[in-house]
Image (cartoon, rainbow, N blue to C red; front, side):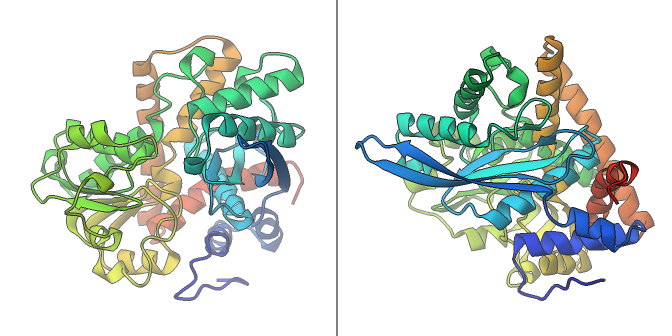
Length: 420
């Protein structure tokens, strides 16, 4: 397969991503020079952000911004606030964003940002000062035609609003196209907040068709109850599917007859926590191995691994989270006949509607939610069909097929610019 190798226990998200990138590029006929260019971000900025805390002391936070490749156009990607953020994760996420943009045929390369912090332990005013400090630190390399941030893990529309305001102060003009996932009154797009989950729901529809399962007959398990997981549970419940289990950081809830999703949505806190209100919970590991039609990992990386892949009892795995299934687990699931809809395809609804938001900001004309949803559905289904057809015609697993579709655009743009 080339110079990079994978072993059974390789759960390193960057190394695993590079392995599949290399294999995809080789299958597409590209050589070592293109692999060398695309295996790492073209630009990686590390910043230190001093923040005055509420107790009067100054704390310095470490942050990152990765820009994978800007041959196609400006880079695009979210900013996450999480205690486990690290440089390699941000690099891998920026590469995945390039792939998502390539599959959706968006005029972007991939970008990603993150700050090592725990927003659950910070006040509202501390989060505002951190958000503004991050923008000041990265302001030289971002902008509506350079790199466009968005929400990600533990960030939201309010944080995007603070970042927008800080950037507008620095540049001394209003720049709504600098950032997406904004509040509607500041130029946000209708449908953006629920876009990732909406895209996952569309992918579930398409995958069920390939397995001849009707959605109202489907039993769904969702790991994670944050933005994507909670909206997806709502959409599945409204469509008549039976959501039999959900989880958060504290554990999981399971009812083989279906959970009361409306009640859980009403009781969850802003970070997606709800299981702490219940006594009869199961573990996240038990949730992943429940008998179901659709398993949706919507939490964090490396949840389905070589250690539990042979115990997965879902017929279809649709990845709403980034990197939830390791390479060895992908091989095991594929060999067992389980259909995987990989993250770079399944969770691309967020960046697609972020693109719509950027377009609306640039033209100063805003669309109805129905128009946004119609355009999103068309782009997601086109991407699914491209990946599925390549998966069948080239006899490769769905992850490799998605990487092949996704990397082709950025590779061709780099070649035509004369970079390689």
